[in-house]
Image 1 (cartoon, rainbow, N blue to C red):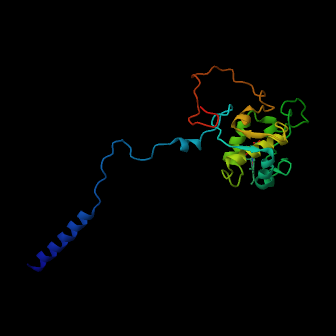
Image 2: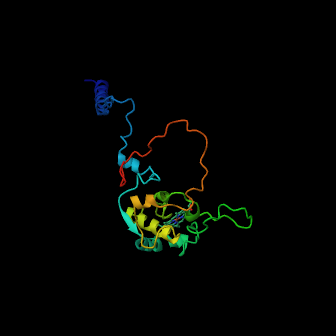
Image 3: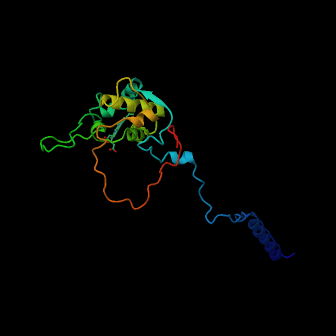
Length: 201
Ligand code: HEC
């Protein structure tokens, strides 16, 4: 074999080896787009809120006394020892102050004076608080600290224990302070709760 032929054979061998090393084409998928995975109920749970009637709330419970400890450890630094506010919002007081015609009396918007449903309190704390470590509380701790805030607002008694059922039964002072939108619904109402809960359904 001449020098040139030898070189050509060697070059061919290298090319053939390289071609052989190419990964094989992925097999065509049965679905048109091959990315992602099916969303499970537990995935969805992180994105759905409980309804005012309690559907969607998890199992568990907490007392006012337990909530006092959670509050002192995880909330007071921002919301104040007496829930009066600080770098975080004031949480109690101001009841009745949202509706008055006295320009000298500023409305005080708090959980006590404004929020129509107690289930929102649970949901908001569970997802967003403590501000510096959202999602770090257990469901029992969230029930407990909700109970503590509601007791400081004199909405539930000092010896209250809250769970899915009793939290949904709490009547918030401003429950009827909202004006319903009189426009007719374009679509029939749908059940927006895709998951089961302690309440069932
Ligand atoms: C590091 C500071 C910080 C800590 C700790 C903290 N919060 Fe907050 N909190 C905030 C801030 C800031 C807001 C306002 C957030 C916003 O408007 O987006 C807020 C808002 C809230 C609200 C809504 C108030 C309203 O009327 O809109 C509630 C309820 C609440 N926090 C409860 C808690 C509870 C319960 C804890 C303890 C488990 C806690 N927070 C711990 C800073 C904090």
